[in-house]
Length: 121
Image (cartoon, rainbow, N blue to C red; front, side, top):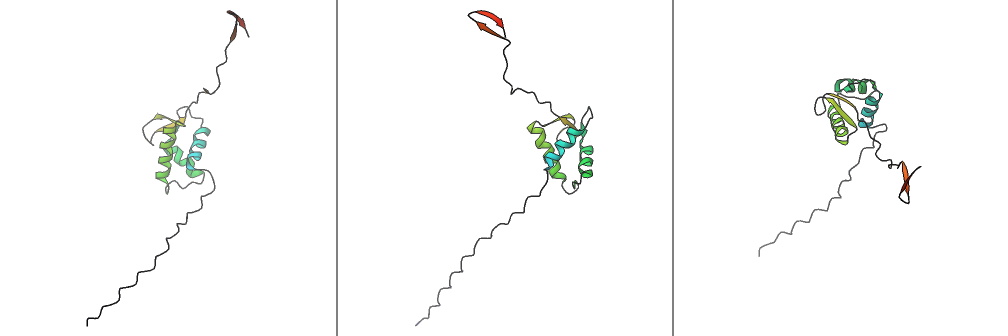
């Protein structure tokens, strides 16, 4: 008679590895630091990208390690409309804060109409 080898036992199911997320670092984000730096500038033509990176480095941010993060933050602030280009394109050039118009206030009428006549308010 032919001997039949027993089927190999199924490997026990491995428990899925839990992803451990790194704790979020305390402190302001890169975007917030950039907005503060540009807002603090008194230059009429805005702040250049190089000057912006120097100011971030002086504030204790490691710009050399996070170049891509700084550039993407600048680009996202430009697309949101928080920053405006004065020179250059992309994440290069000079930037200043955009002038936000207060269009949220309702328009106040200057006078009322009472039975077809105009009376000042």
